[in-house]
Amino acid sequence: MLTILAAILGVVAVAGAYIAIHNEKLIVAIIAAGVVGLMSSILFLLIAAPDVAMTEASIGSALTTAIFFFTLNKIRRINE
Amino acid sequence: MDQYLGQVVLAIGFILAILGLYGLLSQKNLIKIILGFSIFTTGVNIVMVAIGYVKGGTAPIMDAEGNAVGVFVDPVPQALVLTSIVIGLGVTALMLAYVMKLYQDKKSLNINDYKDLKW
Amino acid sequence: MSKKGFVVLLMVAVAVGLFPLFLSFNGGNQISDLGQHYVQNGVEETGAQNIVASIVVTYRGLDTLGEVTILFLVASIISFFLSIAKDDRMENRTLKSVTEVLTTSSQALVPIIITVGAYILVNGHLTPGGGFQGGAVIATGILLIFLANPKHQLNHTIIHWVESVSGMAFVAIGVLGVLMMDQGGFLSNKILSLGTPGELFSAGAIPLINVFLGLKVGTELSNVLGIYVESQNEK
Image 1 (tube, each protein chain N blue to C red):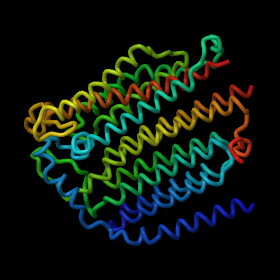
Image 2 (cartoon, each protein chain N blue to C red):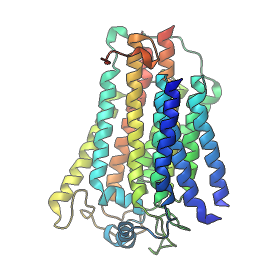
Image 3 (cartoon, chains in turn purple, orange, red):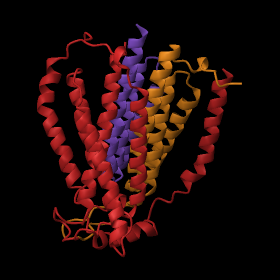
Image 4 (cartoon, chains in turn yellow, cyan, green):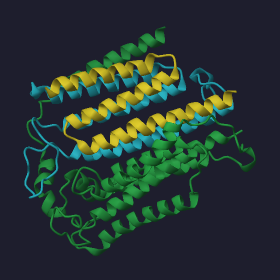
């Protein structure tokens, strides 16, 4: 039961990583990287590591996506 | 079927690390290189936590009387991965600050335009 | 296309090289000897119920000091690099208005997020949590403040004072552990009494160290976010 759930989450994470590398638009790639962080946080919970899951969910998924978007906004403002 | 959980998560970690390394080496856009680095770090962290897994184990926290509830998983890799996640965020933030300053100078996000240090 | 083909070949070689490592993982039947020692003697030596938190703060205190140093270095380099001179700053830029859902819900959610973060900080030795987790949750709450009104400016004096005092107090408690006890080392938690495991005021100095660690990490990440928001104002 838990193994099937881990396999489904792993397939979503690998698909997200593939989209993050090969898509042309930058906004889609950044959101796909955020999805990879979220899926890996749930995988950490299935492995019985709750401390690591909390840290990865807030740092790897929320804060990383936010600073990528701030950089993208500044690059657009320099361009116009 | 629950006896294969450790190996499934270990395989997922290795595949994510290899995909991240491929994105780091073969892309030309600066922001996609940094995205590949972040995915690579996440994959390596999953590998490190999955090595310490014990079949049928629970989280290493004692209950109210101070007795062990069941079999515990290994707590040492989890303590090391906590440090590694925070340092990964710090390095990513530093790299993005460099990208902002480089774009102000040359107005290009392609890595083939930055050949000043090549001989 | 030879560069992409070369990279794919390199990845296949790395995967083939890592495959014996994956096969020799024998499924995990028992934990290592070091983990066995920490699990069996953890509660009586440190008095904390959360074994991972006691490893991070007490048994491996020097690694935590190294990580605090690296975070401090990253924050100071970023603030030096992205600083804007006074006459390059654009005042009163016109921004698109933020939707009403975001402003109203942030007024309701931000106090709850900061309270939950403080709860995770203080109860680090009883339930899953600790210094880093609580600090990261507090930084997420401050990110929500920045997203709800983009013209908000942090009070730099308070943040710098809190960060400096927390860092110095963390190092001072560590050095006190070296000087005072005959069987303690760096960041020994026997400088306060151990108490009975399971209560809030137990496990010696671990709650105090968690509070200073969480404050330092939270204010440092908020400072980095504030610099990223400030740098949008350049001409």
